[in-house]
Image (cartoon, rainbow, N blue to C red):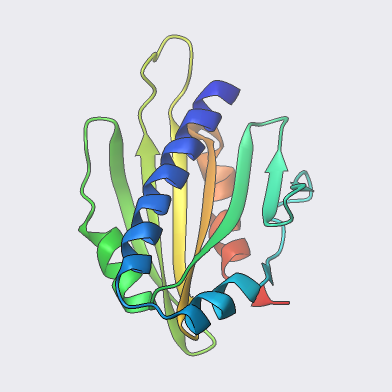
Length: 168
């Protein structure tokens, strides 16, 4: 189970890194990058069983193989949102739902996916939730992953936790 979480999370971070690199190439000045690097955020735990990650940008619950953390990009929310919404379902990653939210009179969007396990007999599928929101001239992505069997328990809690994001 942990291998699936690790590979699923790795894939998410790899794809987010690609988005960040493409956004960085598109006319972001040095002052904008310095402002982006100096931002620090926090959000509430999705559940009491989660502990703070040592990197300080999220939480994990090793008992159930679940993690949630945030990543920032030096890009406007509208551009980041458009790039994420362009992604389609594949054989290994199915889009289950897209939800729009209002946070402090600003839009946020959550993309819920099911990541298909390559070995259905040994590992269960995972649910990943990416919530994207903007803050000044940067985008924040709160990314969570957990086993599909925990979906009814965690989906709402993950989205609610991500919407509590605030700058420190």
